[in-house]
Length: 196
Ligand code: GRF
Image (cartoon, rainbow, N blue to C red; front, side, top):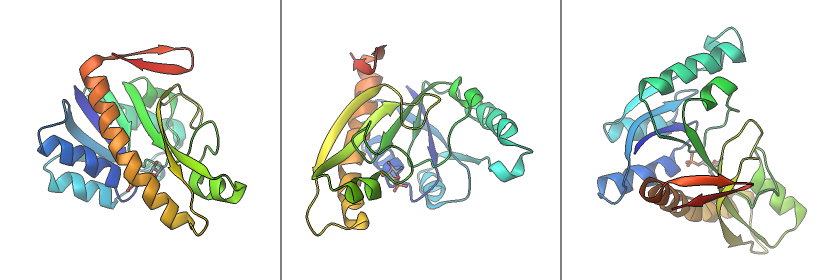
């Protein structure tokens, strides 16, 4: 299974995939890593010898042109699966036609979608949150759910401490989900993704 990852930040989720790949336990190959800006995630890819590309929104006339350019870049690598690993831009319709997209979100969807899932869960006072792996559709964190894992919130948690614990779970789940999808295939039934 050919996998392209998209990153915007530190790329620790990507690193989990790269580590599994170099350990020989990932039944998939990360063939390229793309980003919307220069970021640590790209450096991690280069260190692992993986090809990288950058398509910045500001280098294009508008979002539509960016979407088309990103789609073309992704298509060059003919992925079976694209993983958004901390990619902080909303994907356009052209990009989404290139492959199946998997995202992980640091909250239990449909609660707390959007860019501040950890902060919003804390602010709401919930005692359990977690991470959701889901397919990407045109909405923001609205696609069919693949898997969810929970994380308990401690009374003294800050956004940073909680996000760090969620990311530990998120990395394991992402590797497990990619492994399962690569091994067993997947089908969408209503709002759920079934693997195998
Ligand atoms: C993850 O929690 C992801 O769900 C969120 O940002 C974090 C990415 O972290 N959108 P990293 O860049 O992979 O370290």
